[in-house]
Image (cartoon, rainbow, N blue to C red; front, side, top):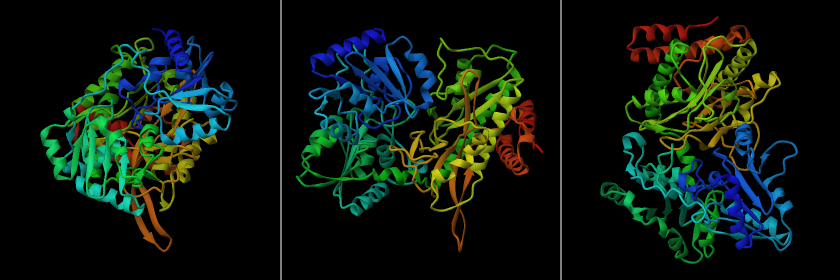
Length: 598
């Protein structure tokens, strides 16, 4: 079925159920960023493959709401579908809520699947609609009958992450969560967020592409805990380890009944921004304490075992990226290569590294104007050959037992225009400024974002995304609450204080539609520096370890301090990676690629 046919069939189902407007989010039952194929109903319905966006379907029209990362991609993928692109955050674009208002009138019903939307979204939407005499209805999951070849729910086995990698026992993590429950006056905590659950139980799996988690729910009591998961995924050794930690294993489908059986009036800690509207409804007889999942902030502070492992992961990951850079620099124009073949080669280089599990997200390998699309993904239809000229952007990462990585490098494959070098240098200077920041404890990502964005703003250019995001430990490559962003949004936690052990990416960029895209990205660990009468000073340790392409740098556009910072970073890269380089030619090249500029 083509998109128009799918939407027509969907509208027929809407009519049968008395639904005037349907909302189809990019969501599963666990507030996940990356979805198992089973939950990709929005993608199946409208054809847009980006990882974020909400589709609204009415009787005569349909629209997709997505953010600036995906404007170009969505415009291309929606062409001819009859679905209008709504560029969120731009002048003249209505909010999703205002758009739904304009499509409805008193007596209408707006439908959405309560098992995949947050309780907060449902409450806000219901309150808005009811003022106008419009009803919000739970449609349930109505896609099985429409999507006849829908992928099944994932069934990958779960595995235990040993304390040598996790750094903390399950018992200690549960006690930390119970400490927060006690502070909030709650007897029970309900969690549906997969990376929070995986961190708490020291379990990992393969249910979601790029993120090694297990489809499940967790209920923590004052003395016990229950993990609701497809029991065939849990082998005896894992079950025994969890039992020893005081965690019982129960069936995935038992969660709603278990919540409905809690004693009336029980104080339950739950995050309405994450917990689904369907599960919140099952708690209607209890007293819900609205509070973020305690695991979110606890796991953001990586312990010293995790940090030591992460440094090892970044050496391995940096080697893979550096091997690729050497191959690109010495072989482009001499042998065939395309965006997809280069991406495949990088995956193969990572796979050579010990304890590599999978990519941490879909690799962005984008040549020339393709790189202007922040989340471009090469397909057989868009794949292009690489030539010994212009810029190639590669944003990629890996999942290792030692942790999660995320790195972007932009490579000059040959001659590059002066303007592009100017842009490359501005991005580099922004990245260095943030990485070398020194600040007092209490500063948030909002307070530091201008350091990275400033060189672009000086050129009258901006990028339509944040400057950086938290990174999990063998979990989600995008992890809250820490981030770098210049504005406060309704769905993020930009007011989070940057603290010891938080890992955040530093990735400014410039994206010129129809021409080029540039991004340089390192990961930073927040560390304590000196403490004096002014307070506790903080700074960053850079753990990403791969050269930045000096062939695209204009040294004269950098201050002496900026050149010094770049030289210091390259000395770190050279000293770290050279002992692992066996090929004499590659060693000589690395020494040149990390040379000091002045």
